Length: 132
Image 1 (cartoon, rainbow, N blue to C red):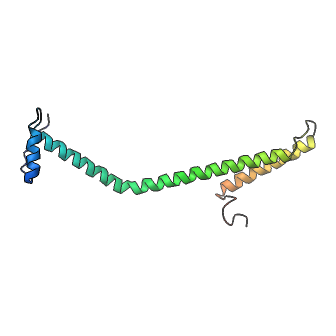
Image 2: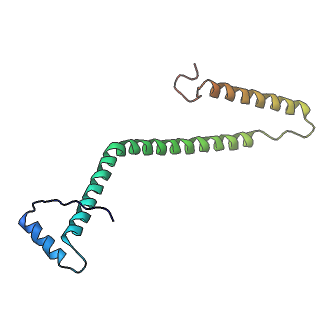
Image 3: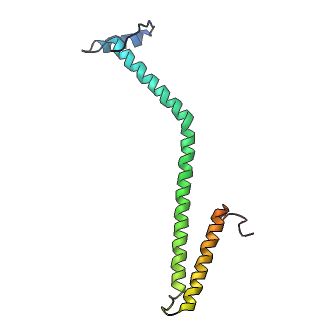
């Protein structure tokens, strides 16, 4: 059991009377009641300080994450609609259309190279001024 330190304190009469009343219950003592109350108060103060220090930052991070999630959903929906549109307007190539398949492969490789360049340079097609 941890060593206890004696403290002398002054309480308002009404608080003192309430403490005496609580301490009359079996298994309760004034020291235990005051120790529990002080511990609870100190814990609340520590939580309040943490909220002050980190609450605004966490709120900003949560807002940014919500915005990222929304933007990702918009991007995915845009991509899905574009793919559906492209598939709807372009008929599939015939199995024996080697020239068409070769042209499609070249266009796809050019597309991948362009994506790699944009990502490598940290540019985005939809950023303002990106088309210049």
